[in-house]
Every structure is written in C-alpha cells, then in structure tokens.
Length: 341
Image (tube, rainbow, N blue to C red):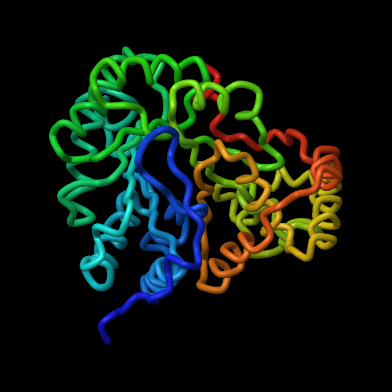
C-alpha cells in the first residue's frame, strides 16, 4: 500500500528556529547512527522512519559512515525515501556528515576539501538525492587549515549540493573561528551538533554561549548517554544491551558510581511521571538555545516513548536542583578529543 502520512503530524510536534536562521527543526529529530545499517531489519527501520514523520519528526540525521557497513544507513534511508517519503521531500530536513574514516588511504577521513566534497557526492548517490539540507564537518581536523574545511562546506552550499553548513564536536573557540570564516564566505554557520546529556555536560560552560554569539543553533546527540540514561542499566549490564556488545558503550563505563547516579535520576523521573529516558530527553532541550535533540530508536514503540517526553517539558527549580546533584560528568564523552582543540 502507498504510504500516506498522518494529516495531523504538524500538530504533534514542537519546532524551534536554528539560531538566527529561518530554518525550524522539530524539538526531537531522528538519528540513524544505529539500527539503520545492514545489520538491522530494513522493514523495522522503515516502519520507524514512517512513524517518525507521522509524529511530526521532519529531520533525519545521517553520516557517511553510519551502518554497519559504512554507507549502508544512507543507502537504506535512500530506499525509504524512494518507497515512502519521496513525495514529501520538501517537508524534510535531511543531513549528513563527513569527517571520520570512510575509505582507505589519506583522502578517506578528516577535513580536507578533497575528502569532504567527494564524500558528499557519494552520500548523495547513496540516498538518491540532488542535495542535502545540512552538510556537516563531523569533527575538527587539527592537521588541515580550518579555512580549507570551511571552504569545502561553503563550496557544497554554493554548488547546490547542500542548503546549509554545520559542524560537529568543535570546541567553543574553534566554533567561533569556523563561524567567522563561513560568515566571510557568505555561508553562515547554521548549527553545531555536540554530544550532551545529564552525564556529559561539556557544552554548558562555553559552547552554548559561543553559539548564541554567532547566531547558530545547537542539535544535541546522545541525550540518553549511549543508552545509560534508560532503565536498561538500573541493575547492571543486561545481556543483549549496547554495553554488552561493546558497540558504542563500553561496560567499563557502567561503574557503581555511574549506577548510583542513574538510579537517583530514575527516582526523580518517577516523581515526574516519566521514564528516565523521557526525563533525559526533556532535560536536554530545557535550554531554548538547544534547537533539537537527536534520538535513536530500535522500534516504533521506542520512538513513540521518546516523543512522549515532549508531553512534560517543564522543570521546577527544585527538580533541577535535585537533578544537578546527580547529573555530573561520568567520563562518557567519546568525542572529547575533537572538541578539546
């Protein structure tokens, strides 16, 4: 049967403007980092993407090396577009990134013009698109001049292969530099994508202020701390969980100290009538400078539970004080090296 999206989809979602731009993003966006590669059933991912759009999620975030194998998430999403969402392309914000290893040799990762623009061309072919809405530098490259990396983003926009330019996991200082270069080139920095959660609060001291200064938005990823901020780990590491597979969450991070924090935060969430994951998502977007939070989903049910977090977004001062006692750094920022330059 031909897919027809829900007629009330835009009544189910809240949207925020990205910095000083004209682009609005849904408060929750769907990230295809996990569960959309060839290791995951295609029809399950397809059902999740369709349900996301039904719920007003218009932004779908990818990267060249999402899978596994590399490129397969983009390829599978391209099939979903062709099968279901192609008639609604102008209602979608589709983003991709380049910066991590993608193919062998010296031109297959980091931030050179050669790598970034070649990667974007490959991403467009995999997804069957003429352009993406946002193209990101996925990480800062200390060995490539920043004006070369930003020049590649500008070229992607001027060539019509991307509508906007973004960066991910850049420090506050490098974000200011990148924004200044792009502004001089005539392609403003639209958005920054950093990791952020109650157990990883590195963006608060400087980065959010820097983004407000340069007029860029902020879309946070891993608001559930790679799954730690869910009820999965309240009693340790269960079989079949992400930590048990050592995928993007090492069991070494599930320390007794971390579990004490997670259990305390879970009690606060219960008092709010939310799951821990729902409170974590709501908390991540409590600051209006955060445009959107990227959530993943392995099923339609998990997606619906995440979106339900938007039903209770307000926090009292007493709740925030309680959360602050337990929401402290837990050494889980896997991307710290990129943002420390």
